[in-house]
Amino acid sequence: MPGFGAYSRKKLARWLQLAFYVVLSITLMVTNYRSPRLRALRSGLNVIALPLRFIAAFPEEAFQDSARYLELNASLQRNNRILRAQDLRLRARVERYRALEAENAHLRKLLGAAPRVADRAVAATILANGSAPFSRIITLNRGAADGIYVRQPVIDDHGLMGQVLEVSRYSSQAILITDPNQAIPVEDLRSGQRAIVMGTGAANRVNVPYLTPSADIRPGDLLISSGLGGVFPPGYPVARVMTVRNSPNEAFLKISARPAAHINRGRQVLLIWPKGVSTTGARR
Amino acid sequence: MNRRMPRAASAGHTRIVVIGTLLLAIFLSIMPMPAGLLSYRPDWVALCLVYWSLEAPERVGMGTAWITGFAMDVLYGTLLGEQALADSVLAFITSGLRLRVRMFPRWQQALVVFALVGINHLIIQIAQHASGHPGGNWSYWTSDGIGALLWPLVYSVLRHLQRRTAPS
Image (cartoon, rainbow over all chains, first blue to last red; front, side, top):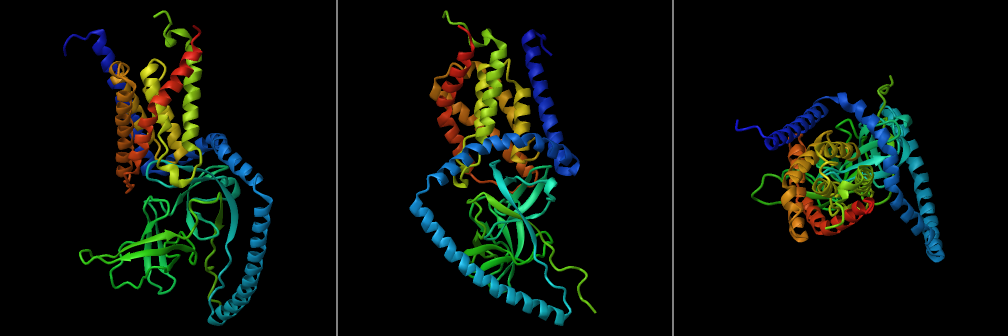
């Protein structure tokens, strides 16, 4: 090596420092990717990060609160009227639903099948929608202290939103169905056609890949979760088919759908404990 | 020039400003906002790191950048080490270009910043690809472009804060 002056020694030190940090990062990434060993560390760090998230969420919350406070009396009254009407409609529907439930239980008993149990749910507030490149991850204000577990389904009042990815003591992170890493087994409510819904990274679009032109699926169809993957309970709306394109050059249909859940709107979600069909069924 | 250089002044104050602005950048990056605007949010943390690597390299080096990136990994829920890697490389490249870039006019600096933030995102993208994340959409470049456009503003605000701490 040419004369080791102070300058080149400094340069070397810089490169060594870079190498150190690169190796450190890659080691961390590989460990984090390969094994769940870092999960405890991460959930600990998330507890520390919680106040940060609360503070960061504050301006938006204050803005929304003041917007609500300033809402005009007239619009409040109108809203109230609409909600009352909706309440009445929903009540009527619930009554009918109850009758159907009873009938269903009766029929299931006749068939010897176990009854479907209603899912337990807890409401959670979205604290942050992280915007790391390409991923759709939200932070919720419920954690292990509330009994939240990894892979727990997250829904809103319109449909399936995603599943819990990581849990720390007082908060958890959920990955949305629009994340490119997510795929959900579904079935077409109209035809029973089985399919898979995949996220695209876009906020209000998902894809339905791998369906051949012979598949029975049309624009407007509602896709509900089929429960086949074992993660999501069956019967929740997932997406509504928007377009079905059949190009003769390709083996599969190009189908895009819109998530049923209101992914961008609202700050309240539900975490559910699906029970599905209990294994003690098939009474003799 | 009879005004003293800010970094010659008081190290303690500069440190507080550095930590304060980095925290502010982190807050701006995790603030909830309408999903439609998410892809336009500039990478405040990267911009802040670029500024401090240019103007106070003895305070903010690869180590600070790494820790900041690690905090972002925790906050974003990404693979631990992903942003940390990208940010420490960012600090390395920035401090290497430091003597030249500081002489550039502001708009030319903005071009360099665009390239730097772009490299930062490229590293993240490569890391995500390697970890099986199929993502890859170009909307990220719009946020880099917005970051570059905002650079003159970020620069003058941070410069102002840095100068204020120096007793003249």
